[in-house]
Image (cartoon, rainbow, N blue to C red; front, side, top):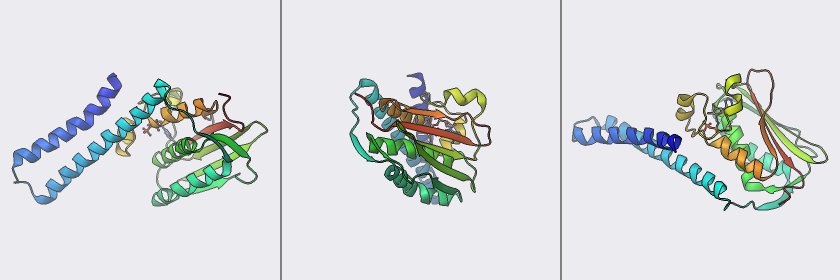
Length: 225
Ligand code: ADP
């Protein structure tokens, strides 16, 4: 509760102070500045919406009301979808985005939308936490029981002391950087929960830097329940 309150208070404080300035200035501010202040107010309210949406998702998980919509589909399809969905964003940052190992991948029984959500979260983190002009590799594989995807970037990496904690709710290595890029610190905790429901694994691969590798593993046959 303390975390949530704190996270919501920051944008609220910003909204209030910009709105107050606009009211007090009673039209004396240059229009460009007024526009800028209104822009901040919009951004901060979007941010609050994002946080509240993520919190509602988590609370549905916590209450057990959220059920997986399991279907069987080619694992390669969800990789291709996520690749296409993030390609433009990667290009905007001059990142090279590579998808490899998708040939011959089997089908998987899973909630396709949720799995896509997890992959998108991992990929957008790779983009956010890598300096422009970086390299992001999506590498897939399988064995008789499992399929997996590893996403490796050559970005800022995660310091050893934070590695254990990045899946915790609201945990962010660099709050300012995460805030700037619209992060809530909830993405990976939601992703972890989705993969837990699938009886799969989501982990940080222990590999010498620079950069980061996240690995998502799913059972080909899906969860038992
Ligand atoms: P956020 O919304 O802040 O990105 P996440 O839950 O998705 O929240 O991630 C938690 C934290 O883990 C991030 O704030 C960031 O510090 C760290 N992190 C996640 N992915 C990466 C990555 N690819 N490279 C470096 N740090 C990362």
